[in-house]
Length: 266
Image (cartoon, rainbow, N blue to C red; front, side):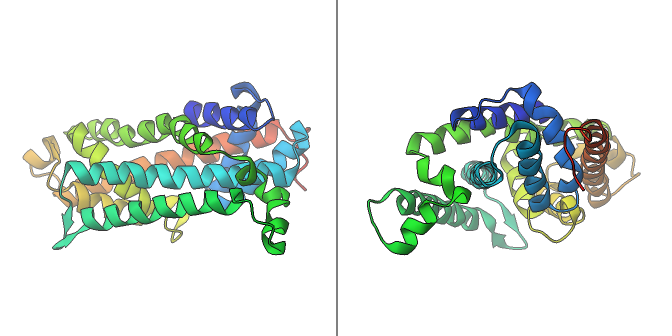
């Protein structure tokens, strides 16, 4: 998953005029993971700052590209949730979330198209001209429709790797969830986890997993009466989140220390 993250970031920066390889991106990206565990926005800002210090890429131009990638990531998550809503009828507490997600996808698609038009329409309004000339919106001003589509495709492997991780984690508990259900429902869990309530979505992610997957999980702990469905899913979700959080903390500390000589952070 992290390889796909670094590879796609390298593709974005290279495509928009700053050639970077996975080897260039990796240490800097891993260093920024430390702050990302506490605050997603701070992690992205740190990544842009590190790029400025080590690769001499202007801070606001790299921030513009990271803002563009965050937007692509959010839309890709919504798109995967939308595809999942077409394959199954997701009802939680008598609320049809499938229709809700489909409405969100429709609105986000219109919003993404409107954003593209905002930066590309040949209008010379003073405010619009000021926004277009800011480095913070440099990527949006230069992006064409194929950049949005290719960007989604570049980030898609990372999203699919993230979604299928749950399928693997469940087997550590001698449990199984059908892969088709994981692919259909996990984007919903990711959407809930992106709500900035707790660090890395701890708590909210587990609650969403219990609600979405409790009709679909099977395993030895359930058959032997060792755990209830809710308890098993909670522990699976907790292991998934804590492992991801600890791995980011450890790699973040290691690479931040390793890059200290080249990346002044004080």
